[in-house]
Amino acid sequence: MKNPTIGILLTITCLLIATATATAAAANETAWLQTFCRGNKFTTKLHFYVHDIRAGPNATLFTVANASITAASPTGFGRVNVFDDRITVSPDIASEEVGRAQGTTASVDLAVTAFSMNLNFFLTSGKFNGSTVTVVGRNQFADAQRELSVAGGAGAFREARGYAITSSYSFEAATNYSVIEYTVYVKTSRKCS
Ligand SMILES: *[C@@H]1O[C@H](CO)[C@@H](O)[C@H](O)[C@H]1NC(C)=O
Ligand SMILES: *[C@@H]1O[C@H](CO)[C@@H](O)[C@H](O)[C@H]1NC(C)=O
Ligand SMILES: *[C@@H]1O[C@H](CO)[C@@H](O)[C@H](O)[C@H]1NC(C)=O
Ligand SMILES: *[C@@H]1O[C@H](CO)[C@@H](O)[C@H](O)[C@H]1NC(C)=O
Image (cartoon, rainbow, N blue to C red; front, side):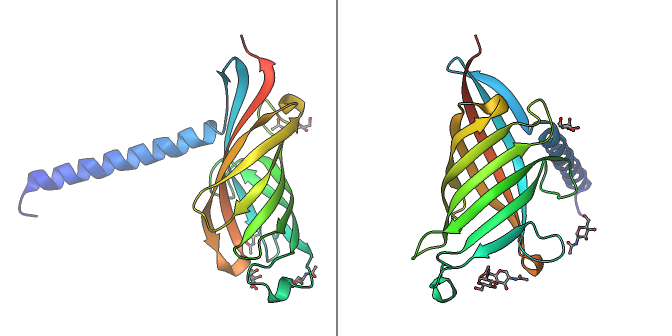
């Protein structure tokens, strides 16, 4: 390199970026669950990754029914799946498991691939261990970002309302394995001040 100063600056920049990335990853692991006050009500923000494995020995999603049209439909219309997916704090499936995403999806659009979701986030860790958030809505899978509704909950999330933002994080064709990112805002009727 002609100019040693540029070389040193580049090295420092790379180190700074690497440190920032490592810090972000560490923050991710502790920040999956946050509770705060919004409009005088307790609101919980959940941020985690759902592992949807559709084939192979570790499959967690299975097709339970097809319609007469499903095989001929470009959108798989009428197919019903049931799943019990692992929820982790980071995109790595080996990272800490904090819950299960359990429910059903049905292909409900004749023109584009879209699912009607019945999704229960059953938490198995943290201060709301044992509580459930129930999410429903229309999920148009090819969209970069989808919005679903928090329709209710149980335990700490009784009388919950809110919304979930979801996006596809990664996909592996060999086992039809999707990692799906969720950010969920859950408001309960409980007053916080
Ligand atoms: C993955 O899913 C697609 C679409 O449902 C299917 O055509 C393909 O056979 C599946 N692959 C495996 C490995 O199951
Ligand atoms: C299935 O899970 C086990 C245990 O986590 C893992 O060692 C194995 O690599 C997985 N198999 C596949 C095909 O992903
Ligand atoms: C549904 O159809 C797919 C092919 O489109 C097939 O692989 C699967 O076994 C069928 N499942 C059921 C439960 O009928
Ligand atoms: C969550 O609660 C269950 C049932 O009470 C308990 O067995 C388990 O150890 C708890 N998990 C954590 C991570 O606290």
